[in-house]
Length: 424
Image (tube, rainbow, N blue to C red):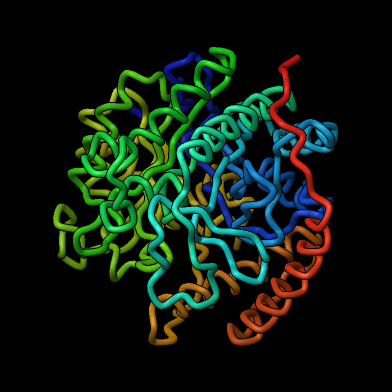
């Protein structure tokens, strides 16, 4: 019988020691040169020693000009590869896999960073005045994006990471191309479902062919965007069916974006047409389980489910349903050694307090700020406080982001891209 501590063999033959994954988290802990910091070393060491079978980094940007936040790590050349090598070693000290999530933000780029935002079409984010007005990305820029994903993957392998996860969820660039709401192009990169998925598929195939067979390539994709007329369950199922032939090792299911941030709470996560609307405990605590169960039956690669999972009973239910991996972020931020505790038959059930500031996007930002406070507690090896005011966490987060943005703009004044690297 498969349990959460049963090893998982991936399609390429790599073995993950158990079914618990630390899903990607928004950390904002890069140093001033956008490299991994000592705080990130400490954070990923804690997760590794805590017993997770797989750690997936917060998104690593493939282009220094396009970051989701000024505190994001960037890996676009080998100028600081030794730092990444040390991070890969520290983050897998417990015997786990350590993958880099690789990403391009597209139009989800803050205006105070002073960089142009690229998107499939020049459609701004709804009710998001903090973000730059996007430009429609050109054909040559699209081809450069593909090359950058390839380069970052090759560098990750050289640095000693076990794999990469291509981020095609949560409204970032690849997700924007998939959505008929944000992609209104009339060329081969837009229009039909096949054309809207073309960029993602080209990135997957290019990355897979550029790294060794033993290096893992995963994809994170939305089960739905949860926006009327947007990317939905049927689209997600079709995309995953196409990926069956692309040597993808693991697909993580999530949902939503900045305009519909359902990953930060269960209410909207139950609104998809193929998700049960019954307010059952399992549905509230594993947001996209119904869809994940269906996809697991048609996917040739293992499926990972992320969203709301904190309790052992829910984890057991997820694995028993045929879903291969359990992705957790909030629970492992609040309790990095949760897997080790579960192995002792304990069930700490770490949960964030109820936070509701009315407007969904604002509530999501407050929740992210609250969790970032606890990320820093672990990263700075502080004694954990029992509680923190969400409003204080938000103020601290916004102050920190603004301060980092000023440093980022200063560093970008003399920036010149060195171009793709040759693998060694």
